[in-house]
Picture 1 (cartoon, rainbow, N blue to C red):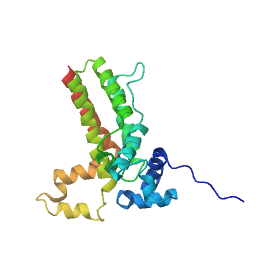
Picture 2: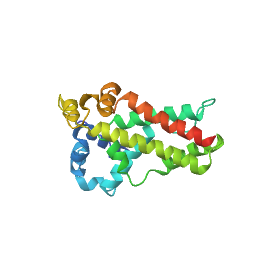
Picture 3: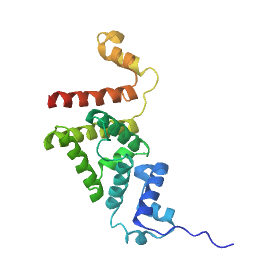
Picture 4: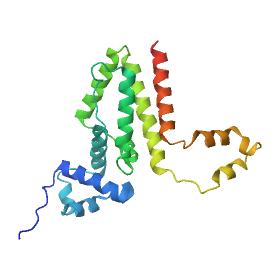
Length: 211
């Protein structure tokens, strides 16, 4: 039987392999040497395709962003429904990879294709009555909200049982304090309901600005 041939090393295979490796070892464990071993080559061979680790991270970030499905609203889709759909899809894409939010926020540049798609999205919002400034600020605000939300989701360390009681002990009203009641009745501050609440506030605020 012949030897199993590994796929040729290209920029694309490097990014795809790096994303798989990311899920195993996290961002802190992802090194060029580890990636080279995974691809069955020596580290210098990778620099024919990607010059620095930052360029690799940029490529990984670009892949995560594109996986969310960019593009203008569908026919008959309101800008509100489009923004909700895009935001949920983007969050899911970040959560699909360990340290996905850290990868994206650490990116320096995105590909020309991604930039062009982003401009198409802004143009669609302008067609819905936005000014270019409002369109850019709206999408940027949503993106930063999601980045920050997911960054906390992926780095939060859950408190030990009794943590709520410990917090209540710091407050004059104890378990009756608004902070404790809000946490107890509102559930996980990083859960789906909390995410949707923040997203709706951004969209409702934008709609108020438009009118």
